[in-house]
Image 1 (cartoon, rainbow over the protein chains, first blue to last red):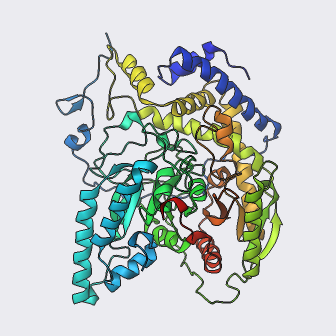
Image 2: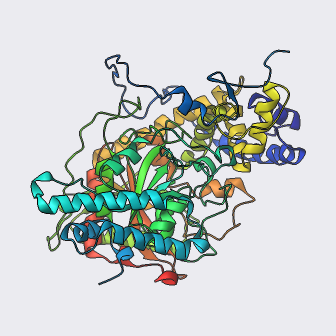
Image 3: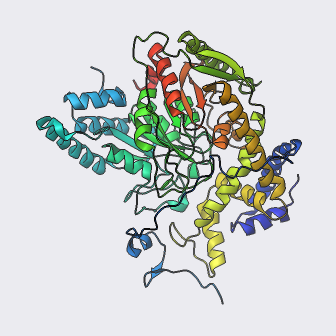
Length: 95
Length: 496
């Protein structure tokens, strides 16, 4: 499985990751190698196997819908790079 | 009397109850030792000495009140120091996950396992080093520099919980919290010559453990004896409504054999999987593990071969599933709610730049791998197939545990490696996890403890695995072994 640099750029776009030219080169190599290794999973016939959705048997997880004291907006906003009027502040989403 | 810092958790508790020393004495001894050694070892990212002293004083007051009136009772782990891997949120204490993207994050709440150990009376010394977001097997991926192995400082302590393992091995703390997604408690325990538990998936709440691979992540614990690890586990485990995958299954009573008991392992069936004794394993590791299994037999256990035929597929399965889950979990680091933000004119540019600058190479690699495995057109071939093979791995364990109570195997193919040995080759680094990944994929518990040394004097660990919810049998076998042997009592030579 050889990835092209264009494919790696596309994945980086999907992941919202800025990568340097050097990183793009390196990841193209390394991801290809790792995916080659992963290709050995295709050796197995899994046509009658269900995928694992949970390692433990499914259980009913219903509980009473109770209102508990939440964290205050001040506590939550304290870690934000920018906030205003009790909300997270970000650069323009739309021009 | 030996130094206070040499005491195991249990011995420390005994001394505190008898009034042989105070929690303040013990805490100061740990802080002094950290002061003396951590410049070299770099096990801690953040120290919390003021908090520790306050908690120690409060513990001493509780002991004093209890001596006046023993009917008051005592929290079970009162006054014993604890180190916490820096992937667990602790309210008001910086929590970095070994990453620049959280370099200034101060959580407004504490993780459930931390909360429970503090409620049990423990004294928090600080936050320990980790590979960035727990992704790694050596702590070399920490954005704040690697931790050194106390046995030989030119070697890695293992990872990702390398800071916690090194600080317990170096006697800077009697106990520490870690997390295990693919071996991150068991492998550093093995490399540092101490004991560590990865509980059954869902047994210990993940609330407040910063998410990496949510279907694999398990909070775990380190100490210098199996008995100590069991004490920590009992306090951490149990249902928590704040983690929807945390189970409400009662803890079995842990019956540890007592000293002098003859054939303490009578009736215990130990399985040995040939798939874990592969070519390429360091001969000293295989020899020590086989000797330990022979010792268990001498202690009354029966030993038989078991088959885990899909073991070799665990590595590719894990390195698709864990990065896939990570790519989703780490989407939240975007410069909006926490962490430093890179300046940019548009929102999308801010996301890209903040993440590009904030994450290190291994985290980026796994986000890329996971994004690819989940992307349209590749989902079925990679992620979907991996989840099916995961079912086969899980079934291997279910079959094996119909025949045996525990499975015994090496923790890692070799003892602690040197810095830089694998850092240019991600696949070689991933191979370090080949024996620890299956337990995470199947959700079964695993316990690592020391069973010998190689010719360089580096510790060798064994891991025992059991069926879901059977941590009790792991502790029983491990403790019986430690009553009969002394490997776990050996301190690292450099710092005695």
